[in-house]
Structures are given as C-alpha cells and as structure tokens.
Length: 346
Image (tube, helix red, strand yellow):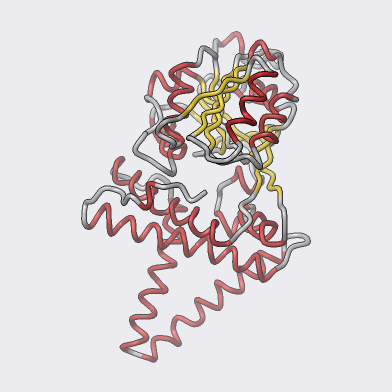
C-alpha cells in the first residue's frame, strides 16, 4: 500500500479467502452463504475451500457451490491439517490480501469493505481482524460461548471480548497482506494448533502490526459440548509450548496464568498430603477463584451461571494441563508431539 493510498475508504483490494474444513456438513453451507452475500465485487474475490478428505456430505455441498459460483473453488487437502490448506492458499493466490477463515464461521456483509478501511490506517499494518460474535444451539453452548467472551475466561484476547480496538498481538480469521508471507514465510506445517498465533508472532517480530477493528464482524458457531471444549483448549496449551520452544521465548504473558493455576492446585494437593495444615492456606485462594468466576458470570446476560463457572474451569484447567504436558514432553524430555495430539479435536 503506497502512502498516497492512506486514508482512502473506497479502495477495493482483491481478496483470496481460504477455508480449511473436514466433516463440516452442518456449517460449511452457512459459511459460504455469508460470503456469497457479501457486499463486494466478486471479480476481486476468490474463495478456496480446502477439504481434508471429509467422510460426510461436506464435499458434495462444496461442489454445489462451486458449480453455481465461479469465484468459489474446491481443493482436496491430502494432508488434512489446516496449515497445508493455508499454505496452498498463499501459494496459489494472485490477490492483494489472503484471509484465513474457519468453516464454523459466518462473515458480515461489510466484512471486506471494513478490512479495506482497516488496512488504510497505516502502511505498517500487515494483518487486520475483527470481533467474533458467538452463536449458540443450547444452554451448554451458550454458557461456553459466554465464558469464551469473558475477560475472566480468556484474558485480554480482545477479538473474543470485543472490549478494544487498536493494535493487538493476534486476531481470529486474519486478513494478511501477501507481502507479509514474502517477508516471514508461510504457516508452520508442523503445528496442529496455534498456527495462526505462531505466524502472528513472527509477523509482529518482523516489524508488521496487527489491527483489531470492531467493524470487522463475524459469527462463530460455538462447540456444543464441554468435552470438546476441554480437548480444544488442552491442545491450545499443549501446542503453545511447542511454539515457545521453537522461538525460544514466551510469546504472550496470558498463556502462563492457567499453567500457574494448575501448578498451584498440584502443589497444594501434594503439600496437603504431607502437611495437612497447608490446606488451610490454599482454601482462601480457591475461594477467591470461585468468587471471581461467579462474579464474572453474573455480569453476563441470560446465561446459566453454574454452567458458565464450569466452562471457566474447563478453559483454565484444560489449557493449563495441556501446557504442563507440553513442558514435560517438549522441554524436559525433548520429544516431538505425540500422534494423539497431532489429531484435531473437532
């Protein structure tokens, strides 16, 4: 983007949207419908749906959209994992911008126009993103979504909480200038999780900036079970350690909080078995956590408070447990990721 382009709001950049998916027959149609209905010139838009060998009706649904919309393309992702899909998009795109999008999502009709405006704020911006609005199917998913939108649940992940606009360290469903990949390289194919966080760390470390705009809006269909939430956040914690080891640094401070909480619980339990009086020292801290969890749930509207508190506990304990297991495997024993944790929890 040249300096003469700064401040303009009518620029139409060309976009490639890459959507990795596998067995998403319930959601891929909703996702593609939102893109079809987007208020933007389809001559400047290419959509690539990269399917990881779905065994349900996903491929047929995609093929129907390909047949009816010339800007939508199908790609068979033999490797199945998301980084291979993202890199295929990078390597085949001829557009100005690449957007990575989840099959569980829908974008607002003004999504691309708002991305244009965000990029015009500074030539230093290499990536822009927006705020997720959670969509629920039942009381469990509503409680999970509420917890994931709370600062108590996810810290300062502003793309979830929606309480900030400006420069951030990461966003969901980022829109990237193609020049970013020319500078920092593609997505890391060794990562099953956290591949966008890892790329965003390299992006900001290379001098680019990430802008979060409240006007770039999308919806996310929340996982409808506590067990899936546990697996998802366990993997986030586990793979975060792998990323930290590769870069030899702690990429964000907030990742340490769940780990320290889990370590406190383990240490308290061990100490209590040896010195029973130490249990009285840990009880006030546990009561403080539970009180803060309930207080945070009460600030949320029309949700089952006990289920929100339970969701908070899953978010923190699963991430912390995954982080601990990652430290043991990657740092202490210097081993590669286990086969089990190379499989997505979807």
